[in-house]
Length: 233
Length: 233
Image 1: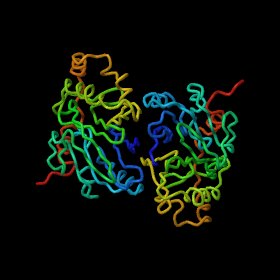
Image 2: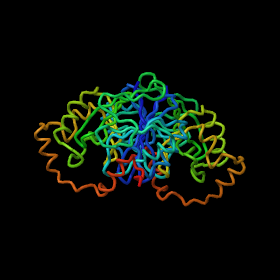
Image 3: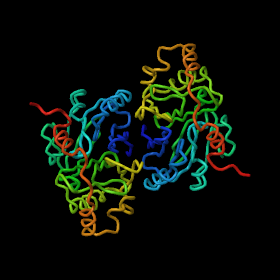
Image 4: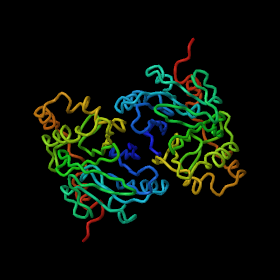
């Protein structure tokens, strides 16, 4: 039965973090937590009476540092990251088709949706899909670093994500326009990047965006490969 | 069965607006919409495939203007406001104990929780309470205008809201510290304004806050009494 996650926002990087918990359940999963919101996220878990079972990343972020390692140390939650993202310290290496189980029968299905980064995963839970930087509301992630591929992104969006039921709620990793949630049906009909554009035209569009690199990418990506914890000497 | 609302934020006034919809349902209710987010809120309804049945106010706000009148004109949704708040243009005048019905069997129970303003109502839906400015996360609303009463606020919080089940999720009208949601159980145990404070001590605290008046109160309150629409000649 469909239920909404709790959606939390980081104004510095326009990143959404999600807390997932089944109705009446006491177990939770966090997707894509941000380092400087660790205390905020722990406060939400405490107030809601939730035990953190898993901290999951959609991909290795280039614009903010994860708090996954810290949340693991502070709560004992398992860390999980895409197997294709080179995060060796994550306890669980996730692959396409895996199922993450938590709480009383809660299941999260793992979908490989490469393109923004090569290893990027999306997660399906209770009629929701957490699309990371693959599919944004009326947009999509960039494809010009970390094994990005415009062709792969087009296929991930149109073949994999758009194959989900139209009513599936889309919760992205970012929004820059004050929007919170969409649906697969709406994105299939209206998404400005893919609707009415051939695979070739999409690739040409994405390959000519000429975006500046994320300011902190050279610091942030290595930090995220260690789940935001200092590297050992 | 518990499900979360969709929570939307206004950075200018730190106001939360809520969209409520039952799992799989196509009918929605909006609580406390903000004027300049009318397009954002309509976009969410369109993307989610939801028909707006009701626009509901917790009280007459002093810090922002509602879009209730505009949403009514644009969607046909019914407007509903507390009977004690002097909003004559609201189609439905709500009283303590009323039940608002929408969609396939969705019910919202109406609780009179005066104190921030005399007519203030809170709303209970699917294990959630929308507390407006009565109960905030680790705080409460001010009591120094619009028929506010520190004694009434104490009673509303400790007698009425704290009588709800501990697991009830608390969704306030504002948060100024980046927090999204709490529970009745947590607030009963930890709320900094009421826990460990007698009724008399709470009244003394609230009556000595000496807060500046909201900047736009003289414009905003009359506008909200007409649901944000221009007054007719």
